[in-house]
Length: 254
Ligand code: SF4
Image (tube, rainbow, N blue to C red; front, side):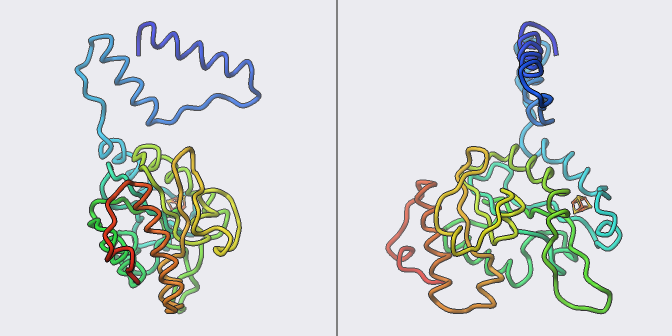
């Protein structure tokens, strides 16, 4: 990085360092974009800022080799980074891979995932149009010989959260949807009941965030009233995205 732009950035970082007791930080994504812009302005490189898929690729590689939670690194089949369109305007966030996701290496592919896919289709998106990721990239381990999944612990979520932060920073969706209380806690650090949290707008780093029930909850609780709540949350998401909503969609029940 050369030239007046770099001098400006260094001076700005210096000012932050002098006036704050926290060290200035810039993510790899921001630095990569800044470097591309500066090089382009300096005429040393054509306008080829890395695209979002290229920016995500090295993070995926770091996740693949991550052993920060040693107990999960040695029990996982594979990491589950995220799937979908890196240019998505809509991004769903769940809590952690389950047994099916651990086997297939993709988030939301089990029964709950099939219901999420149904919701996405009812919104008139293809699954490939949106981006889907979890707070945790490894399946929370369970005692040998037991079945089912367990919720991630707060420490596991804190440890893995920076990867998701980088994913969101690159994808920059117009709207985020957090599925379930654990996803909310992992993303915002906020604990609350879904009754308090769902159905209204929150924000994560300036991005509108809708909180709704995890599809697994709807599989456990088949009451039409609960399914309708999720769908009403998705109608709000469609409105926020300024997508057309048909009469059929308005009256839809999952
Ligand atoms: S859960 Fe996240 S932080 Fe922990 S080992 Fe897996 S990828 Fe690394």
